[in-house]
Image (cartoon, rainbow, N blue to C red):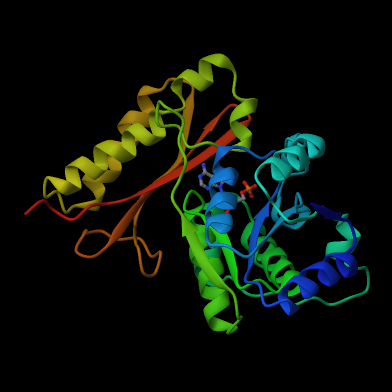
Length: 285
Ligand code: AMP
């Protein structure tokens, strides 16, 4: 497994693999790798071809310096994990390699959806996400990039950027990997206290109840949102940030579920902010 720090070195490795005619899969990560990342890497590997992983805690997408400082990092464990999973190349760059001083990199505009939900709670988050994903795609030149459905708004905005800018990479969405109790696996979960960890599945519980109500024919988004809020509220240590039902095609909030829709939720447990989402099933026939 090749490990590069600089952009030129990593580009040279991926260029050589591409010249040999191999498909190239890129899995962008912020490290602290877990089963969610494993699933993305496995999906890329199962498709055959060269598998590249980037490990970069992107300061541009953090609006809070404390949050950035608290973000878990363990490069040695990440590299061992990548090796075990059969990754071909890892790019683990410094901030200067991703954002070379004095260079004006493309700064794709997330548009109005970029200021809602995660974007409202974290100003500057999505401009930072799109900038780094654009940069990762241009350094790597992948055939496909593998992203998790767990970050549904991010996935939506990256897909739209790729379509609008006519970038060559196919974006492959991978299902959310969960703990046995339903909690979406996330690097931040390790910062939960034991009591918070016990209550953290309340997000998935609320989403699942909303999905069951939608399957039962409930079309009123406010009712589904109240279901989610009730479950999160029942977890005494959680503070609901938002719960919403959005149009799967546009990420705009819906008041009536009359088209493919996704329930989304964010809540805070003291210092740890968790997000989750679930595609709502149509009414059972
Ligand atoms: P992160 O390292 O948190 O920036 O995540 C890197 C990629 O892994 C993103 O595309 C995430 O959506 C994805 N990811 C994170 N957690 C999960 C999970 N539990 N299941 C599936 N994908 C995930």
